[in-house]
Image 1: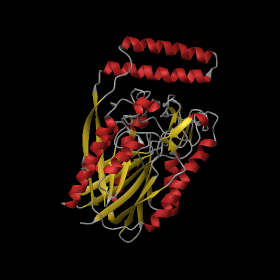
Image 2: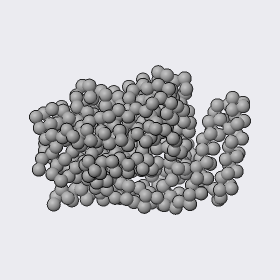
Image 3: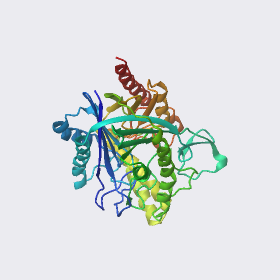
Image 4: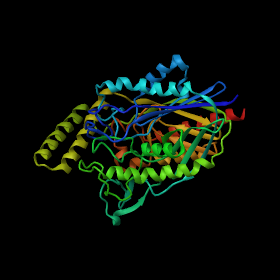
Length: 455
């Protein structure tokens, strides 16, 4: 048996006018700053196959993953665990998860699965003998934990203005930076995968420009100076972002035209530079590959209303508040009312659905001595550590937003602290103890892959 690999990319930039996602507003795109791509690294070794796909998207609904898999069934016969469909979570792309505002009718959404499939088929069509290797390093100074502990023990978010004397401490970040290198047997560069942990929410929906955010910059830079096709796999970034000083970044400011892309450079360039420093020293070899998956059934939290009538009363209250704030040109009050109104509307949907539990599909794959756990959520960094600390692999990545988008996955401790991510809604619904079930499930998958290696 010997490793074979192929790589390809397909442009998935949507047309202007498409709704942008990732916030309580849903503006339409007016300009393309940089293109969005679906990139694929396709690997074979004997009977084992892996299609690693990285999309410059906020996330994907489960039905999109299912459609991509269906379209690949006849030409490639891929099994569900062999397709790793990751999203970088750029907040300046189309609202593909459609979880805050609901699905929208646009031809792009029907076309997207076929574009992703084309990237996989193109990569699979040019496989050749290859070798792979990986390495780990660390990078600090580009991101921070956005949940800040303040006096009184509560948590506030770092996009708020917080006085230094109020701050009691910050949560952790994950400084690990991983690189996977794939070369042809004769040394030609096929692909590289860069792994780091930070929200791709710098550009945000304003200034209404489509952009792959800092992961796109990382890929373009490594492509230019190293060659091949570069992919980016984000980590357990649920509570990690780029705002180094609380309240001093205005991505949501409609007048911010230059600042977001300067910040993209500040975050993306050091990541790319570290990857470029590592790549020449990574030794490659003919390695084995494998993958596995399992589906967990997890309880769903209930919204803080006793009935739909109570939630409907809250909706009417917040609608009146929003209308009054807009009449008075009070932008801060209008924003606060819009946020509360959105949560109340989600509460109605959750109460009417009568959902008490849901499914979360976990995945894992192995390339040589690198083990990767794949979670379809905005996973808190502490959960990533819990998986890595128990992993049987010498090198472990934990990726978020992989194969579907199921919202936030906070730690159980975070619920007592408060903060944005734990407020119950459609994009934050899992039970308070879901973190432990997911960590256990991910470790079990990694252990399964490690045990098969020893057989």
